[in-house]
Picture (cartoon, one colour):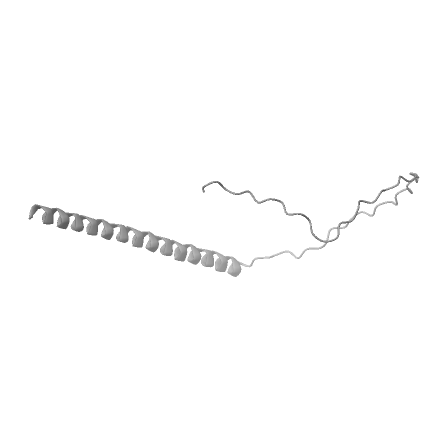
Length: 106
């Protein structure tokens, strides 16, 4: 009952073709033509990015805002986990004390 059953390979269906016989042919070697001289690649002109002082201040301010927002979200999530853990621990203590007091009053 607990032994796994290994599936068997099904038989092929449809038309089955016989393998074709490949006859050897003569090998003719050709001499390759001499390569043409290669052109020297030129570098494409890329536009340079120039930052103005106002753009730098905006980038720094934006980065600072992102770091502060992400930090606030992470701290609030950590605080939520800590508060939940503390409340679960308090509930466990109250339930345990109720169970022990119920056992003593029997």
